[in-house]
Image (cartoon, rainbow, N blue to C red; front, side):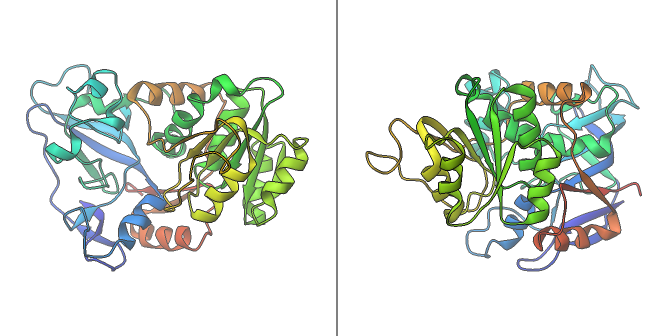
Length: 346
């Protein structure tokens, strides 16, 4: 089979040929229809050799969807031909968090050497993917795998972040989305579907601000050193009750803190390395800052249900598997509108 791998520190990803995997007891073989391309992959491929956490070569792709091709002994609840999405943040299945379906917060994953597909374990950017347990597969139930595969991260991650802030997003409130790219343009749709809040989107690129308006942002603001002041002007000086930063770099995190209202939530979702100090005279009073990660298995089902109802739609650009290195180049250059998706089957 063909697969897209990161094979050497500092090198570009490569398309290689590997043996077709076969499922063992309890495992499921997935024929991959679509795999998402993410900035997290670029972050992995940017880490230096010192402290690099994964074994190479690594098959990329932590967003996957496709058809069940074969089932190992002992697997129940699935049949060959089922169309499914892959739940990425896989845990031990036994700790207190996993028992709640929150495998994204597994308490033993590091200890046991459990990694998500594409982020340590072999990922979805291949013609076939071996799934270790059937619980990591969620039925698509009529959704197109190509347009829905980004929902496994680009949908689930903002949904998880937004869900915790829903009590603050009441009529008359304001929600700010920083970064209107792959995750941000989905977050805008989720906020419009789930809340009555006014949604303001920030970005540095005019085309991303245009996308934000297309998917439902009430206002768009250029993300520069005057952004926080403009948001406060738009909110009568109050600021936003919830801020979702999908960039996470220090400049955007600083903006997030500056425009947060009294008792606001600030969610730093992006992995840009920024941090927001919390304390008297550093933010407005009683601002809560969180760094949420991915989402639970139950929440993935909820996101897919929203997509079936037409509440959220991912804007995708598709690439063949041989074009996957180009997809990463375009993503790194900021030239992808929405989410890039690789089609291993052509």
